[in-house]
Image 1 (cartoon, rainbow, N blue to C red):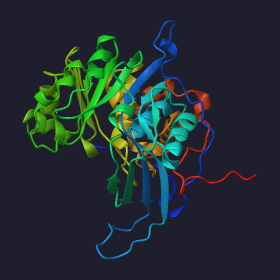
Image 2 (cartoon, rainbow, N blue to C red):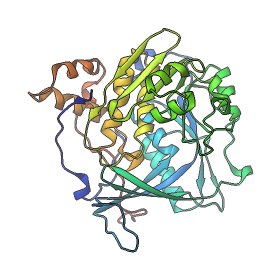
Image 3 (cartoon, rainbow, N blue to C red):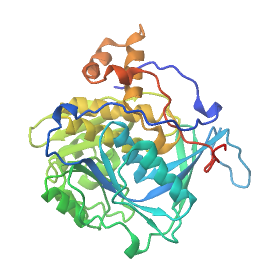
Length: 383
């Protein structure tokens, strides 16, 4: 059953996408747990940063042989930047190892992540003579179509994540048939590794092709991925089957929410999705993982972690722009205030999110302009 919450607001596709703002300090979900000697980094991740160019306000999919006009567009860092931004906006000290192009796109992405979001880019590097990978995304009817272009950075110029920084957690994107040695090294040093996975283009769907899963604490595939890997016809059965390979399995169920099984405690949890109008689903899966990682590091109950992850993902799809649509604590607080103020809300649905009352600090409840994707790159500062 879907948890239905009314929500007000205008359709951003009818308006220009706004300019950036100074970074809001937000909240620290781990404040009560921090102690001298803790790792300097909460979450480490590595991957490819794309420049995302998003066309919005399309009435339908582009038709072959015709020209379509979009009512809006925006540019923002994409790829692994979606996850990094989502984590940072939830108050986690985030470190990213990535290659950045030696071009204006690369400069823009670097500044947006380091200066705009406060992400530590110490492990990252700019690669001379290499251009940034680019993705063009067209959003319409709650879905999107993407076209990407890029080349791998020269092997000798890529960041070397073989010795990742000491971190509480890491997020790894597993690739079938490929082992990333940094995952085992991080886990050996006490880093809690959370993994997701992309679509298996080989069609093998063989868990043995994901050797790094053995070093992970949690695995968060979607329902189709989970069922194909476990040869089951039910996502909940798939989650239980996955716990033979990883301690915690979280299966996202799309409009039906998410289901999780913790092998160590024997606990299961299922939380329905929040019904919202999805304007652009780009990056929603990354935001879900970021919300779940946040709740796990903070020590929340399993059901609360699922609920929070689903909430942050739902808030993100109501905005355009991939990484820059990721919500912060101000958006969470504003949503919580709004749904409590409406007379026709389901009390049982509100109870599911009552844990937010003790988490959202007063200063994060103040309205503030979320950084949005801008329609162009490189506006000159007025002299």
